[in-house]
Image (cartoon, rainbow over all chains, first blue to last red; front, side):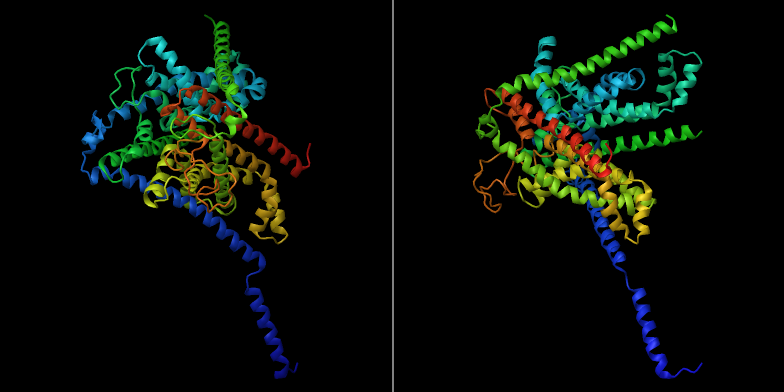
Length: 317
Length: 295
């Protein structure tokens, strides 16, 4: 076992070489770094967009209160909206938005749930082959087209039926009803399909009729899902701008009844923002309306999460 | 009333409801097509709009809609592809991923008018780019990103785990596995989602009114240099799309045949969106057959 120095040296160098090679990143590793980098970058862009959107709209929206020193309570409860005279009471728009949203949801829910029951319990075959495409088509129709039909059909019809101009909350409700119907229906269908089969079988085996099974077992079990569907529909109605703006009449006054011109947050924003100068009170006031929209959208989001959590708990129990 | 009668009554009621829903859709489609299609002609599709009254053809608007769509897709597909791969492959199940998912959900639930206003604030007010194609395309990207990302993530996650394991066991990197194996398998779902979102983008107007603008300056269709002011490809010119045009004609238009004009434009818009929906299905099925070799 005699080793001379000259034998060892090349060996050592070879080991060093191998160590270095083993420590160097392979092609696969480098590829993965690249891939990781790209995908982190993409997700970073999205996060940046969301964060800057929240930041910009919030900072613009609160400028009314921090720079123009408008009282927050007066803004929310005031009924006089004439920003050029310094009067910015947003209540008419807030009431308008909530009125059309709730009205549309109340009208659409029975239709949506009925259609969903038909698609899942009464005629699943017809449901899949025929109603599914119908609902998807309704989703695909752009909102300006709904607005146009509202303007060309619903408004004249209302004018005929009850007099007045035809513009107003009821026309907006009609248009929004058709717009949120597919949203609520699709999600209700999903939640009805998710009800375990044996619930239904157990109920039918006890001699319950189909309606008893549907109303007392399936709808009960699917309640969290249906509520989520309704909230999604309401969120869509609350945020819908153009279709509503076209048929509601755009009068920023407290709605006295359902058939006189009114305004919503979105309609006021659509008609107003282009005519204001950045940084002035009229412009800031509109941004505050946008902030309300943003907060409501976050609120609907939180509500959906809450229901999802509750629903999970009741299933686990 | 006994249980059987109640059951009968409920069934009748539900049938009536379904008939009403189907009736509404058919009325909508029939109304638009019957009142709109007779006014659709070649000169309407290619003609220019009178900038004062809003009357005339929709050639420029139609081009703008497609141009914006292409630009939007060029920006949003790579970003949402990367983000989708992140969520499907790299994201760990921790609070950070949870936060990212919440952010995407928030973005997708924001009303499109809010997205449009943000675009207006950013590009028109802050960067002073003015109403332009590029502002509109980026605003539409904001609006499109969350849905596309979720669609891509779902399509990628639906690919069976053993496909991933096969790639990794061959010594391929995660990234290579994802791009070379998982993505092609997930492609039919992704393409369907992309085409469906294209339909949505095509019909979107609220996000565009204050970003891409409400005017369609006549462009010179012989000039395809994007740097020229009169070129249709110039990304800095205002570009009213078809959907915005319908809105504008109805709310501020002075054309005496506004109803006919918007019916015809709506018919074109609806047909385009229907084609997108149909195309999504056909293309998705075709690709599915190609990649899976199933019938």
